[in-house]
Image (cartoon, rainbow, N blue to C red; front, top):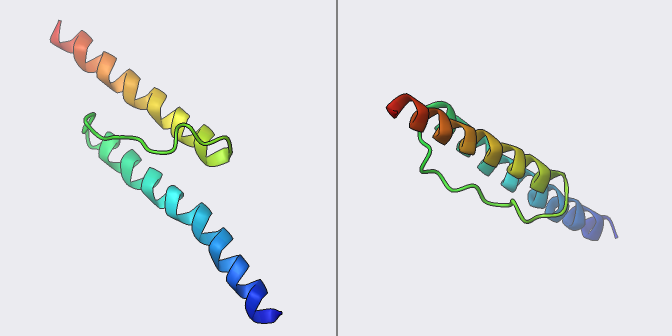
Length: 71
């Protein structure tokens, strides 16, 4: 039972930390000015999905700022 509990904990933890690490990498690339980055997880219906959608807003705004500067 303990091994099974540890296995479930590991799977659940990984399902949360892996997407968050991906979002962190995306945010770092956006901060560096890379607006060609793809944001995964925007269709998720959990907190990670909400965070991904917020990062998408930052990306869209960064693209608009670049376009306005070019104009």
